[in-house]
Length: 303
Image (tube, rainbow, N blue to C red; front, top):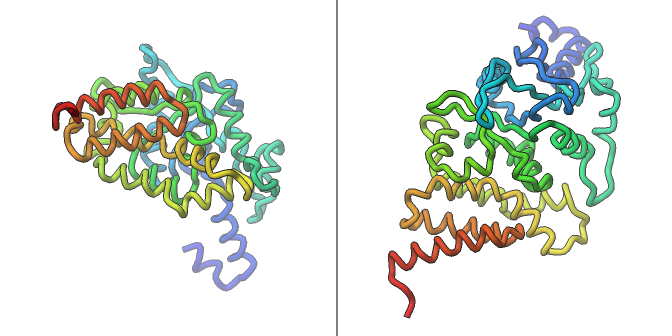
């Protein structure tokens, strides 16, 4: 309708297109999102979500306000988003003039090769200022596919913040809505499957997604995003491993009841390799010991 009415007026039509392009997904009115905190220090979590799932995400945000189980207590959860903190674009008569908060006006400034983009510096700072860290609203295949192809948020959260203890997940479990620590989720196959919804996600699909995230095309992109052109190969491999870590962990957990199958052994091997490349020797040793037990149960001990 708006397109038809503005088509004959080039100026108005251009303003309409600009407004659509730059209008932020506002938490106040546009998408009926629950209002987030304007200061990270006042929030329990910084929200991480993928735009294609905005409808379900908004419902979850309201449920957080009503109260969910976290660390043994059911209570309302205070959160912030990049938009509530002021990183969204402020639109004035069809033109993007500035960010909501002037302190984020440098988000589009050019950066030196090898430096982190300004938006990530602000994002990391906000995550560490909250009481508990990052909260992923939906752990779905679309989340991983969306962030790996478009926003890169998943890769950045795990690959460059490098603090899995800061990552949490909203799960609508059988006991009601709750927030789970990422590290706890990786110990519970049933809860992990529940986190993907009724249909879940196949181990094969997660393995494929992990492979995509460490493919040559993504590797090239990450080099441009995070390291100088002369970065050493070992540094690049370390970045890749941290970025692939969440998917490898999920794929392994989802195959835990199939650990004596080819898929289970492959998932364990892939995760073990990632643990080694990220310097988590203790976890690698534990997983390696279990993998050896499985192989010996299947084929007998080596002579």
